[in-house]
Amino acid sequence: MDAVSEHRAYAPGELGFAVVTVSDSRRAETDGSGERIRRLVREAGHRVEGSVLVPDEAAEIRRAVEAYLASPGVDLVVTTGGTGFSPRDRTVPALAPLFTAEVPGFGELFRQLSFGEIGAAAMLSRATAGVVGERLLFLLPGSPKAVELAVSRLILPEAGHLLGQVRRKPGG
Image 1 (tube, rainbow, N blue to C red):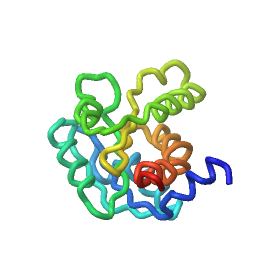
Image 2: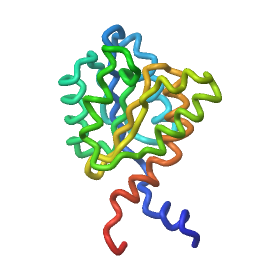
Image 3: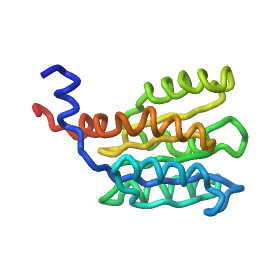
Image 4: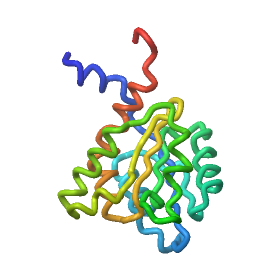
């Protein structure tokens, strides 16, 4: 068995996702990005354990994400919104300090793939991901197209693999 196949053997099958939409302007009925994440997750055979919309306020963002990270059925939390450079974009500074390990390849690949779709404007995204204990946290832009790209091309194909590695016991 090759190393990749061996690593994938530790991947859990069905994952529990939580979705946090960060926005001052959207409401539940206009949350296209959150809805797209939930749909993609369910279509891939995973569970959506919870979903919430919070304003772009650091304390509220962090409170919502920490609650999901403490929830037993949640393996990973995906946020959408607040990852740009405007003064109201507070998701990254609110949540990056929670990372016990950053997943730098996620942001790098996301921006590379985005560049193919939107050109140099891809550099305006601070999309990132990290490990928090034995769970994963992905911080995505608020654009439905960006969410589709990140979830379908990066998160769903590798989240189980990454979780399997994070949860792997020493010597296992």
